[in-house]
Amino acid sequence: MKKNKKNHQGEGGGRPSKYKSIDLEQVKKLASYGLIDEEIASVIGISRPTLWKYKKNKKFLNAIKEGNDFANSKVVQSLFHRAIGYNHKEDKIFCTDGQVTTVPTVKYYPPDSTACFFWLCNRLKNRWENVNKIEHSGKDGEAINLKFVPAKDFKPHADQ
Image 1: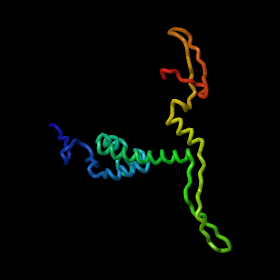
Image 2: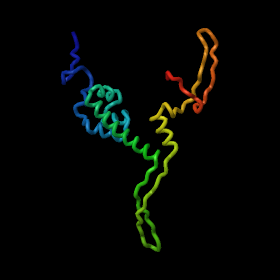
Image 3: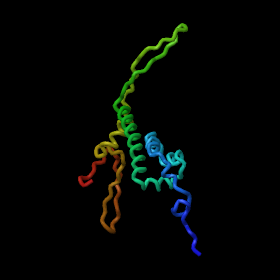
Image 4: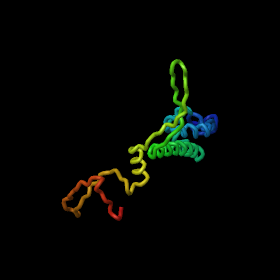
């Protein structure tokens, strides 16, 4: 006698899917806060493999991509401001002889060389590569001569 592998919903065996109860706007918002797949899965009450399965659905995947794009753009904007320097308004609060005084000021953050370097290495890779290269020579069957070239001295070949 064959077993009927259909559950009460007419699908294959296993637990019923939670997909229909998931709010895609919530998924998008979670991704926009910078949560990774494992964290999103935990918040919406599914396992990571189930989340990967749901990502095969275009609407679900787009919700995560749109959220990630928003989060990434905020980080790019922050890195850019850190690289070039920025300022913002802030209130300084002083207490003198029991009197509280609030003074509006402008706080200045100078450019950060590490942020500049990181930006340039990622945006202008051809001119700002931060990798040491090893050049080698030799033909099939011959010994290979290796030469260490520090990144500052490395000049890529025209075909690279």
